[in-house]
Every structure is written in C-alpha cells, then in structure tokens.
Image (cartoon, rainbow, N blue to C red; front, side, top):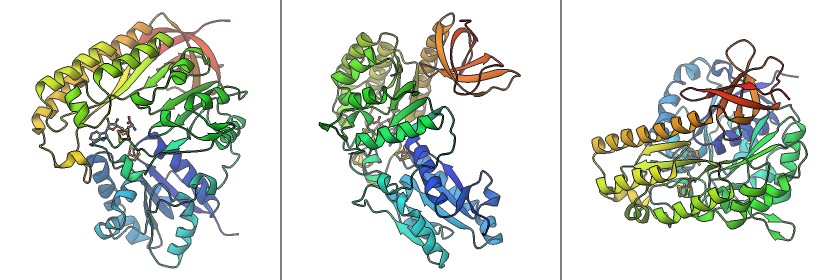
Length: 441
Ligand code: SAH
Ligand code: SF4
Ligand code: F3S
C-alpha cells in the first residue's frame, strides 16, 4: 500500500469553521489523507476561510501567495480554498490566484473526495452549490479516535436575519437545523471518545428548531436531552441572537445544572437609531430586558457580546449610547470591531464614517470593555469555581482548564489529568486568565 497523502488545513474565522475543518479532515481520511501540522510536508493545502471583514478575506490572498515556492518545487501539490471566502468569491479566487486548484463552499464539504479525484486528473474543481442533500448526513462518520475533553458540535447553520453589515446569510445560506437524534448520536460518540464538554454551534444557535420526537425541538429541549447523556458534564452554546432568547432557554439557564453560566449575546450597538439601520430588529431596551430576565434566572451568568463601531452614519451620540449600554450590562468578555464594508450587503452603499473617528471610538470602547473584564476577573478572586482541565500549563506540575464562566484557570496540580473536573479556589487574576488552588475534598 502506498503511504497516505498529507493534508494541511489552516482555519480562519469562527468556531463553525473549526468544526468544519475537523469534519473535512475526517472526510479526506476516507480518501487516503492523514492530517499534517507541517505545511512543507503537505500533498494538499486547504485554507478554511472567513469573509466577515475585509481584513479576514484579504489575508487569504497573502497566505496563498506564500505557497508559490512550495508549488514551484512540487507541482503535484494541490491548493484548495474552503469556507466563506470560497462561497462569496467562487471562481474569482482562481482568476486572482491561479495557484488555486480547488474552491469548495461550506455546504459542499462532503463532495471533497470527488473533487480531489478530479484534481488527480489534472483539472481544477469548483463547488459552491447549496445542495439539496444534507452535508452532515453525507460526511464520513467520525473516526473513533480519542479526543480532548472539549468539542464543538454544529447544530444549526446559516442565517435568515440579514443584518445590514453582514455576509453570513450570503456565505452560509438560510437557517437549517440538524435533526435532534443525529446531534444526540454525535454527542454520545464524542463522549465515548473522552469529551466532557460540548459547545453547540450555530450562526444563530438559539434559532435552532431541528426535527425531533413529537415535532420540532427548541434549543432548550435539545440541551435538556443532552443533559441526560451520561459522561457529558458541561453544555455551552454560541452564537445567540437576542430576539431568539426564548423563555424555555432562559429557564434552562436557571435550572439545567449542566448548562454553563456563560452567554454570548451580541448586541452590536446601544443606539436604537443605528440598531434600526443595522436591521437588528431589537432595541437597546429590549436587549437590556432580555439580560434582566436571564440574570433573574441565573444571577451569576457571565455575559459576552459583540460590538461594531463606525457603522455608517454613527454619530458621537450614537456611540455614547453604546458606551452607556455596556456600562449598564457589565460584560465579562467581549469582541469589538471597526465596521468593515462588505460587498453586496445593504450597508455597503451608505455614507461611511471617517476612519480616524472609527479608530478613536474603537479604542474608547475597548478600554471600557477591558476595564469591565478586569473588574469581573478580579471579583473572582477568593471564589470557588469548578474547572474542567484541558492541558498542562507552562510551569512544572501546572494544569490549565476553564471555569464554568469560561475563564482560563491555571492551577499547580501534578495529579490532575486532562478531562478531570475539580473545585478550585481562585487566588489571582492576571490579564487574560486566573490562577487558583485545588480545594481538598
Ligand atoms: N451570528 C452572530 C455573529 C456572526 S459574525 C450574531 O449574530 O451574533 C460575528 C461578529 O462579527 C458579529 O457579531 C459582528 O459584531 C461582527 N461583524 C459582522 N459583520 C461585520 C462587518 N461588516 N464589520 C465589522 N464587524 C462585523
Ligand atoms: Fe450576521 Fe446578523 Fe445573521 Fe448574526 S444575525 S449572522 S450578525 S446577519
Ligand atoms: Fe467568518 Fe464565515 Fe464564520 S464569514 S465568522 S467563517 S460564518
């Protein structure tokens, strides 16, 4: 038998791309490929790309340019572009960068082995369809290999919300939810392979409405069913939309012990005028009301958000509204971005904000968010948390894991193994993590 071919995958963008990259590697496993971490070894390079902001999309081309010498040295090397840039730009990618042999959109990954066979005959391959068949059903079953203690599991894809700035509805298509029984099977399989925490993924994960026993299931119903899986200790989900925080999901945050007290709930802006122009279909007040209800159900929940500054026509007053909303909420962590014009989206043609103004707003916003993050981390000192350990730390005997609030926690604990869950007293807060000590039983 010939030696297996080697596949190098580089992943950009959101967690859904991380999950997709795993599934692509597994699928290509069936076509005789093993994964390599060394690009110089690869017979095939796949870039799994992100189109959300201009910088992310442009990075792909500079990365591709760097493969020229490799390809000159080994003309058999195949180079592919997957993910959201593939979907958005399709054939244009091959025109702009003739090194590229293969372009595959996020809904067509199950067709990769056929596409690879086409490459072997010296042709190029392009597939950016939104096929009828369900790619998850067609993707090769996941191999039984042992895994680390945490895993992502995509339950919902696509978006029907059409925020005026966002490419996702175009790159990922309309909202589709996977059937509940398939998700439960995949979760049980992950648990058998060592996983103790699963993060359910979707571009709008709380809009989940997959077919299940007795009709469509909500995300909350799915979470309750997952919480019955023995050996699965922790459940998380991301990313949610404020308008889809249903009563049963809020209630689950209060009563489902395995559902972790962390919620990423992007709001984008605190100005109703801008929210309206963004087509977000919620107001600052309705967002704050949702937060209030979530906190009533689970007072210690740690909140995270996404913010865009410099959206077209954003005034100083609009920006101040955003700062006020942040003050009102108190975020444990957050992601903030300068608005980036995306071709084909409704906001692209509107009057743009001066770049220096946007830069200044981003600086101020991030300073406030960092302050809040530090305060919340500091408030953890002295508290007892539960830590799921993932890997050894840098110091001898040190292990690193995540608390229920998703804070990274460093503990000197030579007897602890990845996958162990232990009670820890937090002793210290540093820039991006906490330190603590095991609490004796
Ligand atoms: N589905 C998720 C977010 C997907 S994109 C949600 O609705 O929350 C992740 C984040 O990228 C968004 O929340 C937004 O803050 C940011 N983003 C999306 N498009 C952007 C753009 N054109 N410019 C800057 N940031 C953007
Ligand atoms: Fe993009 Fe809005 Fe959909 Fe989120 S809800 S993916 S920001 S269109
Ligand atoms: Fe990027 Fe696509 Fe995710 S655009 S953020 S990789 S859905």
